[in-house]
Figure (cartoon, one colour):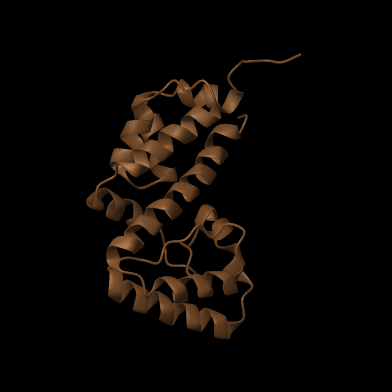
Length: 170
């Protein structure tokens, strides 16, 4: 038997008071505009509809909105203390050798100096070496090209975080 009912976690999200929905969305992405757009689009019939709305909102963020979103992300290799989300997402760096961690710190600083923001990558499932190789590759990008890569990476991160938000049953 096929059911078309809204998954419990998504139904819960759809019924949150606006203030609570905005707070939950802000935990997923620090962009106020992105959170506003997603909260305003409720109710969502499916998680795919929520993800599509997230992608659409991400595509329309201004440079200032992207900067606000990036400000919510700690540097790779230095997750926010006491933040299980950033620790989980950056697990690939947690067990990395000290030399790799030191190299990543140097690369993060060089990247930040060039672009004015943290190196942002969807780190979930990536090894420390893969993240290091990505920053080495991307540091040579033009700022406009890098901004669009960051937009894409933020979109991936937001989808993972939204899935955690709406796929929980409680």
